[in-house]
Amino acid sequence: PNFKNISPNFRGLIYDPDNQYSIPYSWGTTGMVVRPDLLAEPITRWADLWDARYAGRVAFYRGQSREAIGLTLKSLGYSVNAEDPAALQAVSDRLQELRPMVRFSEDYDPVTVARPLADGAVVAAMGYTIDVVEGRALGVDLQYVLPAEGGLLWGDNFVIPATHENYAAALQFIDFVLRPETSAAIMNAKHFAMANDAAMPYVKPTLAQDRMVFPSETQMANIEIVLPLSRAGEELYAQVWTQFIADDEIDTNLR
Image (cartoon, rainbow, N blue to C red; front, side, top):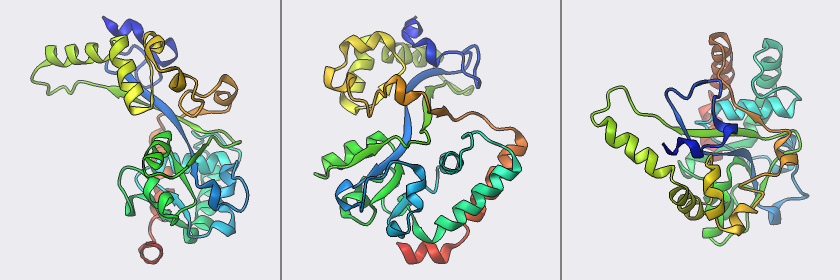
């Protein structure tokens, strides 16, 4: 019943047009997390990650190939969902330029890039608002940047596996989470956004007004949702990423 609280903006998306299989949960953006005190000048664009001054101090998530390729597409002026072979060849060439300069976040922490930023090993990284929250917990003032070329939009969903053993309890749990007060309590504790319009009156004003978590309409105008690829597109993206992460020797030297 509490599905009625889900924002219309998050219903009927391309991967589940009738919400037959999934219930929207949380959402957010992929941008850049930076140490402003260690930068030569402010970083405002994806393209700034290629600045030679930051060689060896830029981090990507090895396990987030789709987003890493997407941000590279954005840096070159393409859509985050582009499948044109010429565009992806340009991305591959661009990533090869970055390869000697990049570290992988998972080599420090599988969950957050906050620690290498806090240690100063990294000054700029592909990341999420949670990384800023984690950095603040470590006593470091990190900054979240939505790049001028446009960030990426992601969303998490609840699904119930077909092999479920207690369908009724699963539905009851999801419905509990979708209560306005419950969703607001989760947002207030975890400092991320949920696709629950009815919860917003219960969200702390400081969080509701935090543009890092809830970007303005102007900020959202240039953000693209990551959409499913065709089979051919999946193969092209896999080729680009396999080539990018292939050099273990470089990876070892930068740890």
